[in-house]
Image (cartoon, rainbow, N blue to C red):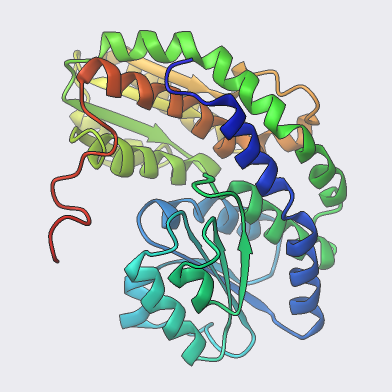
Length: 333
């Protein structure tokens, strides 16, 4: 597979699963000490990656869980934030400035701050009350967030299958390698067909809306300098549909939660207008060893693996490094 180090990938994924005992011990302590609300705080991609877990809590629990933009939180505040708040942060590098300021802000309001990163000596790891460290560069953070929130909801009697789900995560390294292998030819074909495409329209919903936002902004825009439109499948028919034309590249991200019919509807309409609709559906992947009732929860992680293959092939055919930036962390702002 192009630019895929299987050994490194497996090691990173195993390091995420290995955090389970520490995550569960932390959650149990927070619950026992009376913490009663959770803020999931991020910036850019790490903010978008919080949305599936806010979505999970909103539809299954009365526990107040909110995703917050780090920079906005510092200037606007949040009425939930206080001595009974667990504020959760994620950072690949451990150096994200907006998150560091938000960590200080949340700590000043009495919250218990939690950080997930791959760098134990980083500012984020040093700045939080509890740091849980994975292998360097391990991404995405879905395993940690699912374990953290899943355990919390289980303690409240709102996630009866948590232990079984957590046990099944042990197969993820193998399962995700198989996903990457299956996705490889699809990714190569998409990249070849779109090497000269300069605009993509992305649609997703439910617990894949965060990934839709992330892939549009953080990959296609930031890393490939491509123009995009991104819209939630439930909102597609309230304005954005007017941008779809016969030659528009429409990318549909389809998962397996209860919002699937909303994305089906948007996909069906897009195919009536555009001759260039690409559907990436997590249902296409076997995920052997994962129970059917948990597949939807893992859709963001599966799709991240699939689209990483697409990203690497876009990098190749467009001769545009995924590491190239004009402004981000290059200029002062």
